[in-house]
Amino acid sequence: MRQAELAAAVALVLLCLPPAPLAQQASPPLDDAQMEAFLRTARIVRTRAAGKGVTGSTRATMQLGELVHDVHIQTIDESKREFRSDKGIELNFRDKWHFNVAAYKIDRLLGLGVVPVTVERRWRFDPASFTWWVDDVLMDEGERAKQKLTAPNQECWTEQRQLVRFFDQLIDNTDRNPGNLVITRKWQLWAIDHTRAFRRAKTPPKPENLTRIDRRVLERLVALDLATLKREAGSYIEDADIRALLMRRDAIVAHFKAGGDAALYDRRDPAAGCLSTASAN
Image (tube, rainbow, N blue to C red; front, side, top):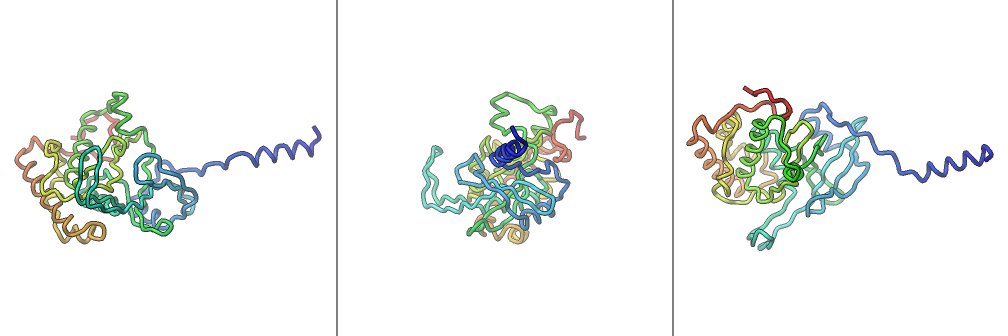
């Protein structure tokens, strides 16, 4: 083959190849404020379906300067007088992107660190929640249970799960499932997708899930008040949601105080994950 023909053939092959994926920064050393700024200002360079879930959510790749990262976009905003599912009939059903932002705000008020950074931003013509895509995911809880895998530090793992279960009781999350609990390679547990939280039960729906709690989280829980919640999350949940949450809070605090010191522990840095078998104390 002559040189000109070879060059033309190579060019044709290159034109047919798919574009190279944008390089992702797997573990960016960013704090919450920096992630929030990225989510609000970075430009969207690629989108596709998020994959799991029933809300038609979107996974997008965003770029700001040299930083490239994925986000989860949800625009769901539904209210129904009656909703039927395999769990039964729910009255005054709500499925709202707003609750993702509220869950993140309340997570940080409590010092939990189990909900990824989430902000409000417009997607096309609609307001939406933009959530930082969890880095370095190993699997979700469904896959872990299916494979019967255990964390290297089982005590640490149990404490993480106890905090997620407590949080779901506090925010009255009716839609927690193994697919929206994701596990990183460090065995750090993240709780995602809270669009069906913030029901208005006056007591924890499943008090049996309240087993133990981090001492500092309990202190912050006690300190929560109406004014703080309205300031931090009032744009995303209604006053009635906040008042119901505070009633559940009171019941949760009473539950753990009745349990005494046996119900409390001092958690290690959640960002460390559960790889190490060393004790947190």
